[in-house]
Structures are given as C-alpha cells and as structure tokens.
Amino acid sequence: MAEEVEEEPKKGKLLKIIIFVVAGLLLIVVGLGIGYFIFGGEPEPDPSAEVNQIIEGKEAEKKEKEKSENNEEGEEVGEDGIIKKNVKAIPEVDSYETTYFEFPGDFTTNLKGSRKFLQVSVGVSTQYDEKVMEIVDSHQLALRSEILSTISDFTEEDISGSDGKKMLSERLMVVLNKKLESLDEFPGIEDVYFTAFILQ
Image (cartoon, rainbow, N blue to C red; front, side, top):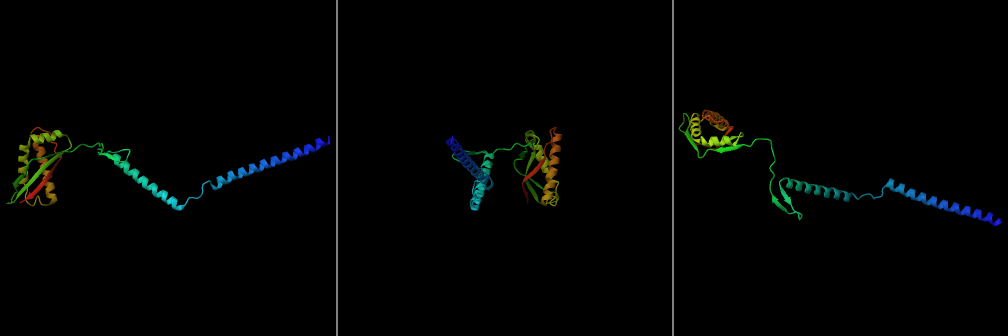
C-alpha cells in the first residue's frame, strides 16, 4: 500500500512537468506567430532596389504603351517581336467624306480696268455625294465660262491679299451653284480652291 501512495505523487509530478513543457512550447509558438504578424516576415526593402523596381516598371509600361499604339495602327507583332505588317487602321467617323474636283488647265483672263492678267487653277469640293462632282465634270464648258467672266469682273485691288482671294473664291462658289441650278442640276458645290494664283 505504501508503494501505491509513492507511485501516485510520481505520476502527478510527471503529468505536471509534461503540461508545463507543452504550455511553454505553445506560448513560444504563439509569441513567434504574433511577432511575425506585428513586425512582418519580410526584411525592409533596400531603397535602391525600390528605385530600380520603379524604373523597370516605368520602362515596361512605356514599352507596353508603344506596343498597344503600334497595334492600334494595324501592326502585327510576331512571337519573336518582329513587326510583320504596317497597316494603319482607318477610324470610323460619323462625318461625310469630302470629294474634290479640279478643272483641267488654267484660267487666264484680264482684270477689270487693268492691263494685267490673272492666271488661276481652280478646284471645287462637296460633302454631298460624288454625283455632284460628276455633274460638275459633265458641265465643265458652261462652268469654265462662268469662272472666266466672274474673274474678269474683279479689279487688281479686289483680289489683292488673302481677303481678296477669299472673296473671289466665295463669289465663284455662288456663281457656279447658280449655273448648276439653271441647268436643272443640284447646286452642291460647297467650296472653291485656287491651286495656282498668278498675277502678271
């Protein structure tokens, strides 16, 4: 019976030691975990490494932007990085297409009250339809006559400077549209241009 009493305190002491060891190990593990969260697991980054990362990031961003701009222009980049074709994409717009027509040859006529001659090359434009330019082309003879008679109504002072040229251009537009209307055609000329303008 005395032996049984001695074994119980030994077992109790051994159990207490095991509990203290396990509790100590548990406290150490919990402390390490809390320390990791509070102070972070990664060491502080080197400032020069951060600068290098920023520079590399900007360079990569710039290359990516250039690549996307190139692709917008229709360039196709292969796997090896070589551009295969360079075709610009035409953006779709909700505006009308401008059609131009230039009268062949020059118009040469004397100016009103002057011994000088004006030699011009004339072009017209419209945003209505190509049909307007076909009408202009088919009535060239009548329109050329209107252009010559209108220019001869202007004096040397009238056509001097950019304002004078603009006034002549606007007058020609009105006269040409009136002529088209008198020919039972659509008066669709929207602007008149001078591709050559020589006063002799």
